[in-house]
Length: 439
Figure 1 (spheres, rainbow, N blue to C red):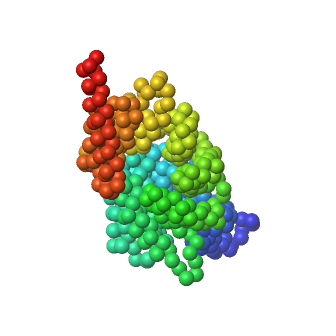
Figure 2: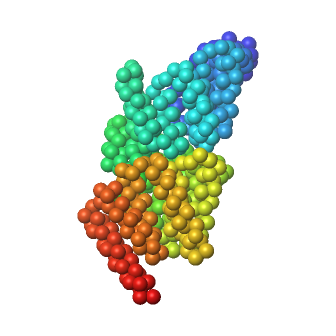
Figure 3: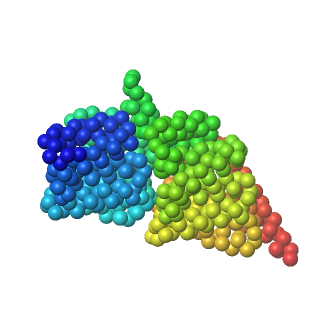
């Protein structure tokens, strides 16, 4: 371009408006091309340390987060931060962007530091939304739900213009939090609310629509309806493919969910295909140190366990535990699931000595995160009681199963099943005591 071109200020304004329209259309490659042209103009007319260049770098950061290029997002926001610090201007937007980029990249502690810096300056809808995402990954689901409730309240009280798509994403995030807390019905309602917000006579295909279908599918899966789950997952996958490259991180979760649903209907060939594809995408994007890799390894282990290939299942669970320890040396709720799965996958007598320790670790964490009165603790007690029953530890089996009955609100059929297990364990323990007395 000719640097003497007097139309550059006008061109800059035009490109700014074009990128806004392209962002709304989710035309991310077009956004990238327009931003490159805009940055070229701004560097030539405003200078490398201008606020206009800083703002353009922030737009690049936002784009890179959308397309899953988190390293580039961190770099873009960091450039913006340096320029803004030189100009002594407000930094909350930049810190928010860095927080989200670090969170998606898997540097959760760093993300927490950035969002706290943003909160020290100001707080708004987006700040609490990002804080919720960070708390999800840190395993503080209660705080995440609270953050999102605050975010939605702020949206309704402070947003002069109704952005139905953004509000739908807030509902998607809130639904996700309730699913982690076991509130499947509440989660389902929020996902449906998101879909209704996205309903438009001219268009229904947004990435946020894909997120909602993915969440609805997970609700079906958790309710034991894998065919309904797969139907929703496939809708989600089709939409994701319209917007993102095949290696986008969003596909990890989608493939993971699909693999487990196929496993539930015992279609293990398709199940392993999707789980392995998910793991490939996760490793390509994050190497090993990321929750996506942990979840993928756990899911593959679960399918191997279903096929009674316990040794290989245990290897996957142990790999996931090692990665999670590096990510969260001070603990995380996901350890409960991994320790529990690892304990049930111990097949040899040599491994059995580790199983009990895995279960103890799982119980301690469950009590730490959910307390004595939570249904999740009850479910864990039920699984541990079943484990003790299988190892002929009948007294311990009775204790755990009785606790499960107290803590969980079971359907009648399940209640009877656990009660029968308790009677069986008590009978076996009585026979064992009689045999010992005779000896």
